Image 1: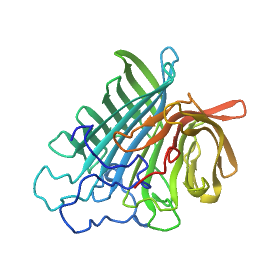
Image 2: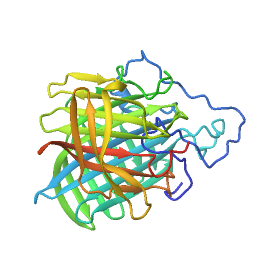
Image 3: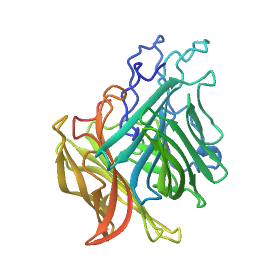
Image 4: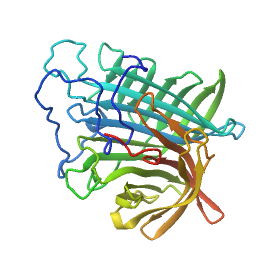
Length: 364
């Protein structure tokens, strides 16, 4: 499958967008996916790897970097795995039992928009693989691999190349109840979810053939689930923030058709590694400023105030136009942007903000 071929309509936060497909199953039997249930401890390094029995899974890296002249860039690298439930009894090696996708983007203030590229393939034939043992993902000349405590991303895109390492000395931050992360009021509306905040980034980024040596900080999410988005929810807001003092915040809310929060959650980790899991009543998102896309007419709340328990932070985008049009691949338009964290006039850190369901409700 090439990157322009038909593939499931879904997005990175796959706990609310189950993988549907343009293909038609050849068997009438319904695929049975394992449910996410509490009480199952995550085990590493095994759970850094793929979980092919589950419906959908992703590894998502976002970060801020600077080059030796102080120029800032936002970076996103995401790999997805999907089990479409098609032809699973077909002995052919060409049967699409597992599909892999990848997105990469550079938020470049010099041009005021995202540079974006993507890949897609069925797993197999050594051209596209997702290891079950640890994070080792490849699609052609795109890869994300974990060796010891270091990730490495290598991306050969049309407008840019990425060759970055991400050092992760700390233990994974388990979201929710020891990795069991609720996404709705029903217990089955959940995912397995852990994060790696405060990754130290080094390497090179080349844009239009001109290379830069860069360094900075990043965030990695790894999440897998078989659940689909509840009918009440139409989209979500999510943020992962690295603070200058070494602490970190993950927060999300899922919105209903009126725009009101339907479910929310998150975690606060202090500089010493102590974690506070946030309940739905402890997380709130308040739009501070909206930007209207000249291409789609969508209004995005690109500046947000996020409340986490008794703390509040303002998120200010690196620039407004970080809209990502992925209709030719995953079938939607969303906003995925680098943001600064502020409190009054003080800058406290940096991270990423993701907004979906504003262009159109997320479709299953």
